[in-house]
Image 1 (cartoon, rainbow, N blue to C red):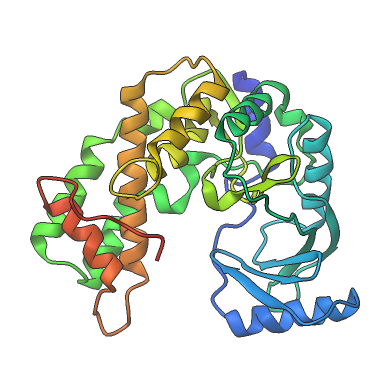
Image 2 (tube, rainbow, N blue to C red):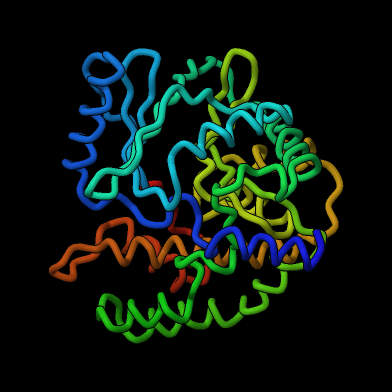
Length: 315
């Protein structure tokens, strides 16, 4: 990918991903989902996931409600393009533009999960096809192509300043987190090193459905451009302590992906910083009275301990 191509990316978006902020009003999101469900003649909705978006299901249809940075209709065009490049993604059934509260809705086909575990080798092959065959020009115009270095939760100086201002953790913990950020300061060079590719940006078990015909990759909210290493970071992190995933998952994914042009030391630098970002995000969602959640406390203990003996959970 050339400097000209990177300038094209800059021209097409402001660096923000398709979803850049979480749904704050979950009640409003449920009401918006119900409104769109009625238009599609769907039955009662079941909440199946709360993350950056609120996700519901009714029968064979899944509704995702979120604050999208561009028209939800772009998700349908993106899905069509990806399937054309042999990237397995859900079919988009309908889209609904953002309302006065800024909540848009995308209706997808529901993928029934197989009883088999995720075929990570196949996922690795699919991500390789993404990196090899999909270009900036392939992405529908108007669908954001973010940059890892522009993601707000990877802006460590700003995030650390917010944590310090909130007085959530003591001085020792704050000093430790700052030292982790400083030790990994070359991460921007790592993710910006050519050759650059179009990346999914968040490949981990929560974003892969093992369907009857093989794995399906969902949640393209963080579509981005960077080194291919960027699509190895989430699963590598999940597969190793302090997370409680399977190390075999990343081993199989890497085998399916094939040869890479970067080294494992750089991958570990990024994994450590992803864990730092996950810690800070958990701290920032602590209660307003300043009492940390159990999960936030576990993450701080991990950084302060000499050994990785404090497991983390998705909670």
